Amino acid sequence: MNDASSKAVVRLADAAVWLGGREVWSDANVEINEGSFVVVLGPNGAGKTTLLRLILGLESLDRGIAEVFGQQPHRGNRRVGYVPQRQTLQPELAVRGTDLVGLGVDGHHWGIPFFREAQKKKRTLVEDAINAVEAGSYADRQVGLLSGGEQQRLILAQALIARPRLLLLDEPLSNLDLRNQAAVVQFVARLAHDEGITVVLVAHDVNPLLPHLDQVAYIAKGKFATGKPDEIITTERLSDLYKAPVEIVEDSRGRIFVVGLEEESAHPH
Amino acid sequence: MHLLIDLPSIFNYDFMRNAFEAGTIVSIVAGVVGYFVVLRGLSFAGHALAHIGFAGATGAVVLGVSPFYGLIVFSTVASIGMGSLGRRLYGRDVAIGIVLAWTLGLGVLFLSLYTGYATEAYAILFGEILGISKSDVLVTLFAGIPTLLALGAIYRPLLFASIDEEVAEARGVPIRFLSVAFMVLLALAVSEATQVVGVLLIFSLLVTPPAIAQRLTARPARAILLSVLFALLFTWSGLTIAFYLPYPVSFFVTSFAFGTYILVRLGDYLKRVLAVKKPD
Image: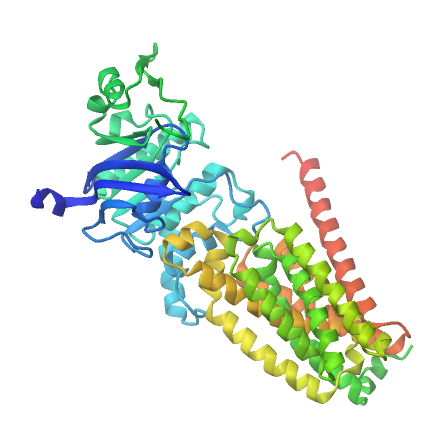
């Protein structure tokens, strides 16, 4: 037990979160190991983003234990990178992509940067991060005018520049076409499996992720189910867990769909 | 006719020297603070702070103190209240407007308590930079320098929080503190700018120059510099022309601001049209 918890990057034990006077989820027991690629699934409003915000220290637990790298979650943890869910940034935002990425280097520092040396180092870091996400062709343009997918890559570069050991991505695929979805999934899977960065990704559709996943966390009706994808996404397991007739449907191209949990009621009985 | 030859003679007059000095300080402060006003979408809040300051200014006149102090006190108190709302301030135009209307009413009451109100009210509402005294210039300087220093100190986290509040918060940037701190700096800038263009015309120094700058460049440092340069240009040319023509300075400052904005938008439009016409 001790051995397992020391290796876990994120650990929740009997955790429960309340928001705005209602329980979002409870009895959450989750362990995410270093370097694994985890997807968080579940209907709208089930509390997927809440899980990420909890890890970031932006929300707090009502009951139970939460640990990130063996410590209580807290804001400003340099080991945690975050790409929030977003439609798009404001279109009139008159800031270049490079400025946005540069915030990842020193955006939290006080004062005005005066030293040329530091500025030069920053420029190199920013350039490298932009090249890593292949955003070079539009990084000098005004971010507000870029597409959702382009903005997302820049924000990913901003998160990666701080060299996080845990990367939280909230619905990074929802604004993208299939080709871009595949590119992002490939990139993120490489981060997890080649560079050992633990990735927790919130998604609606598990299909583009399935070949790369190590773990699935399913949140619905206020409860968590975690484990390997083929253990969790089964008719028996999900039906049993949520006391509802859940069905896993497979289409002709081998894509799977969870039916029966889409309608998340605001008041779980 | 002999405008260029005459130009140095402007500075033979004390009131013109004072006006240029105060105008310069105010334009620099307004240009820098204004950049963040536009970036954070707070132009209505800035406008409202000036109107709330009107009640303070007229109240100060009743008490026999300089209206500038009343303006600073009222707008600063209001700014702390607004700033502590944080992101809940956005989209609160109705609530802000309701407070604004009430404080204007309060200002009217104070005015009626003061007998010689007509000229004072006019100065507060529309600016009276030609009536500025040497000690007013010093007050402006002593309010302006700390404003700029404080803004320099919070520059990077404020930029981060203005662009992407959620990520900034996760990175440990103190969002709420910055929100309040910036609103207080805005209150100071508004109080200063009121001396030049008055409560009603505050937009022309606080919003128009940075709005133009942000249409011309997407680099934050360059946009701030441009914003300051435009504010200086409007103020200086307004003062110079008003010296020769019998019309108010505020009219010229606001007209230059408006005219430049129209030109820049027109330029943007032409660029787009030409880009469409060239298929390759």
